[in-house]
Length: 379
Image 1: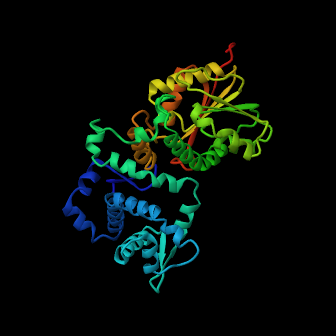
Image 2: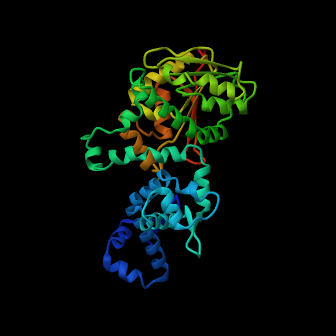
Image 3: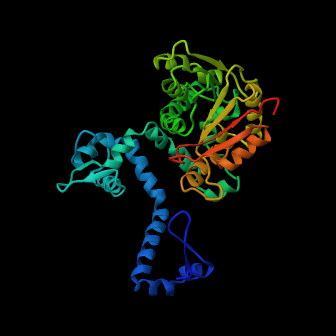
């Protein structure tokens, strides 16, 4: 089987001959008679159809979230008519949705026809911010309704209006939109903070400033993990208004300061020996990121650290979640893009940082990390 070679990432990598064979319907029919090749073919066929059906899968999930079906069965199984009445759907359409949810293993169909919460559904409800993320996917779906026009730059994506803060202080003027953004960021920040703090050791940092930190969700997690660390928060004035209440409620009274401003227009406050950028870079263009990193370098003392944490592209080894979902999402925002750790390292090097280290994420779709230091004047 010289046409089949093991892949570094698992599965099989085909030679050029193997690709020609895989693309031959005649060979496919012959392979169905060979047990080893039949298993490979059927597995590849299943995964191919999973890609084809992916849009419908996501729409089933969206409907389950919008109608709060998973919550309806969280305390126990329910008959279809009861769920239909609660959701305001005809019984036959509720049956359709429930069957789809069970096929995706979010729900479980019992022998008596009732539906219960499955393990995957229970895990979904437990992930902070996941429901809110799915809940605003209607905007992303509309932006990608014509993906070819989107890729050609012929559309005006709605996501750019959903996240107006990426345009700077002038963009974040609508209190309702800002509140929606802050709520979604806060709810989804828990997993990011959890993984980032597992990846990067902050021991020895005296004062950390989180730039673009919203209402302080990441700083709250840092404060709990490092009880002696002083904390600084920097974000747009309209965004940080709710931060003091959140940080005080987290038991951090007396340990933090809040600074309102825009890194596009204002220098960053000084005094921190480490600066974190959590899910900030992928919101912005390379030119904006260069400006931000230059200002981070100016604000840091010699040997001060910068910590970057966000979902990153797989780069030379494309990653399923980050190079599809995250890459298209950030492109639809109109200002940013999902970068690989190598690209981020290059941007850091261009702005004069040294000692660059990369930390592949436990869950790359949640976050990976890159750290660097501002060299001392002597070096």
